[in-house]
Every structure is written in C-alpha cells, then in structure tokens.
Image (cartoon, rainbow, N blue to C red; front, side, top):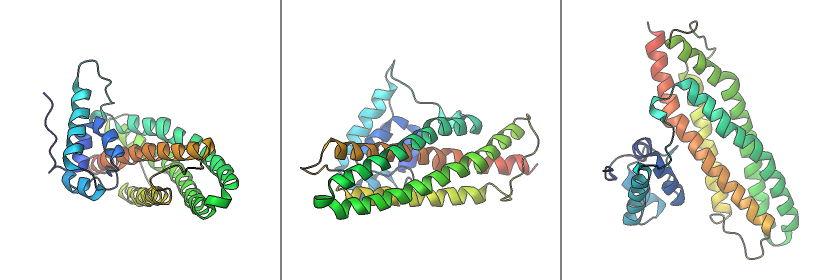
Length: 249
C-alpha cells in the first residue's frame, strides 16, 4: 500500500521518497529542485494549481510506480557519489552538450523567419538562452574538471581505496555553494523564458521550427530540473557530510 501524499512535507522530501512524482510536479510548474524546501501545499498554491487535482495526480503517480513490473528509478539514496557523478555526466551533461547548440541554431533560424511578427520576443528569448548556454557550459566544465573528480577521490578515500584527497578550495562546501548559486541563476533564466513565451504557447503563425524550438526548450528545462535536483538534494548534502566524516579522522 503506497503511503498517502502528505502536503505538509516539503517538495524535496516528496521527490526523495517518491521520485516518480517529478513528472507531475513538472506538469504543474512546481519547483522541486531550487525551491524544493517549501511545503508541498505552499508550492501548489504558489503555482496557482488546484490542490486536490495535484494531490490526486501525485498519488496516482506514486501508486503506479509501486505496482509490480513498473519501471524503477535508480536507488539514488544508496548510490555512491562516484556512481552519481558518472550518471550525471553520462545522462545530463551529454544531453546538454548536444541540445544547447542544436536549440540555439534552431532559435536563430526561427528568429530570422519570424522577425516581422515576433522580433522583440524572439530577440529577448535569444539573449536569455545564449546567456544560459554560456553559463551552463562553464558550469559543466567546473563539475567535470574540479568538483566531480574531487568527489570521486573523496569516495575512494572513504572506502579505503585511495589517498586522502585535496581540493584547492579548502573544503567542498565552497564549490558546492557556487554550484548552487549557478543553479539558482539557471532556474531564473528558465522562468524568464517561460514568461517570454507565455508558457511555450506556439503562436498561431508559428511554423514547425517554431514548435521544435519550444519543445526543445521544454525538454532542456525538464532535464535541468532533474540535474539540479540530483545535485542540490542528494549529491551535494552527501558530499558535505562525507567530507566532514572522512577528513575529520
């Protein structure tokens, strides 16, 4: 029997306990990554969604995931930091490296074709997206070159498989604080793009390329939300805790 959804719990607690609910939260525009510390009831109200409708959809998703034969998500809570870092690079970094240039090129084509009727909006959308792309590409490099190698070394040391790790930032808290700040900036850019596009409503004169841009941006948004959730809510707290325990000995 699946536990009933408890609206007094935070959104973060809900997603950690019931990962399958993420898709429902995405559908209703409820933030579970950067803003996951809010009680579910408060987050539903801020999203302007119907409380009973959202709770019913969340319960349905949780029950469906618990049925025999249902596809199961990885066991994030018990996965090592090394495996999590590998997953994030393989799944989310690879996705972004492929989609960022593809969507930007497609957006440039749509902007040229629809400048007469949608020029100002597409111009602002392009500027917001280009800034986001630049920030994300730098963010991914910092994770791949600095943070994740340290986390792998830290995991190895804690497991007795390697030497004591050293990080130039003194403690992992410092780069994690910066990563979380960049996550918030990325989240703000995603919100701005949703506002500019009226929640990605394709205009009546929009062509298939216009539709493809909006679909691509929404797919990127969903992927980035999961990426941030895995780091902010699982990987980063675990890294801080493990470093404190392992290096204080």
